[in-house]
Image (cartoon, rainbow, N blue to C red; front, side):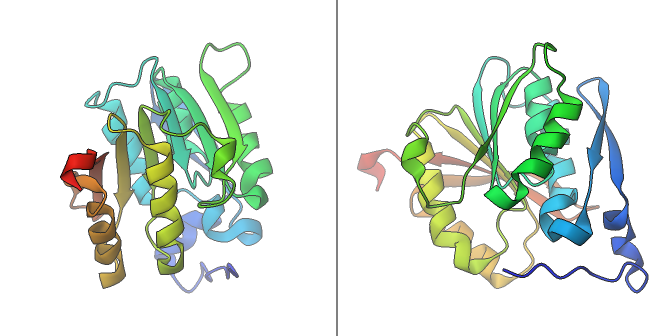
Length: 217
């Protein structure tokens, strides 16, 4: 997929994506996230869905301390970093092309010896899933991962593989097109899905999904 940068001068709303870094305050500390739109495009900027998901995690609605968490399509790593700082044991994943950039943000915001637990690993949805232990995570996080229709089957396969019946999945996204609703319908065939939060200002939804028991399928 070619990632073509927008012209920030032509679209004022997107100028923030051309900033070299963005600073956020979560888990009682400032988190400075480096961005690199020109090199990595959408994978290297902080989207509203990530900010809203971090805010939701900070509310404490979901138990994080000492829980095993995996973030899919992490991009800059903000969500995984916040989950780690809130006490989770987090695996932060993305495709190989984004890993070096992702690792730098994690390293800068979770210093060695801080007590927070986070590791960065390569994960392309639907590929080599056997490198991860199946059904072994308490929580799966994804911010703005529902946007490319051709990736929906692989994303669903990945969620199914990583989930047990006790795993909670939280997906933060905008519903931009009908295809996004189509993914939620696909997800609902294998998971019980409910909307647990909506930020009207940024038009971001958070959906909670839990794998259906075999007798429910």
